[in-house]
Amino acid sequence: MKKYFCLAVNGLHEELFANPLGQLANYLNVSSPAGVHFNVVGGMDPRPFINQFIHNCAAAAGAGYSIIMIGHSLGSMMMFYLADAMKLRGITIPLVVAIDATDWGTNAPNTFPYAMGTAMAGHYWVPDNVDRFIYYRQPVYPGGGVATLATNNTHTQFEPYERVEAHVVLPILPDIQRHILKAVLETTK
Image (cartoon, rainbow, N blue to C red; front, side):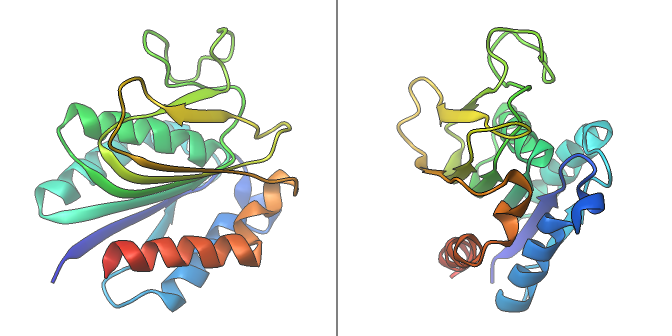
């Protein structure tokens, strides 16, 4: 039986807005099979914990766990950084779901992670160590980040979705929750 390390990374001050990612994680936890449980991390600001997330994901992969990651807003931005960090370690991630990454970060080459002042701010690239990457985006601040496949990435099944609903409600929309659950179930079957 496969083991799964499931991470759900909060956005900035998300707990002040009825914790939409926590609500999504609860929905997934109730509906997913045994052994698939999303742990919500990041508190009020996930940035100080990025090295801990990298360590925990790498340790889980080293112990034989498959990684599934979900993030919203600033936590969505973390999905790109975590995927890059796992690529550097030779770790493949079966499923990443990023929900409306901020438009003020980037994982562009030769930039630093919170590169608000660069021309690349708000642009993210999906590395080729991810099997399936689902990205929901709405076009206005504080989200609105644009995601594409990294150069020469012919491996990842990339599914971008454009939405018009408000940034903070995307993780709790029923159709998005059902779609993410379906992806989790397909990944863990």
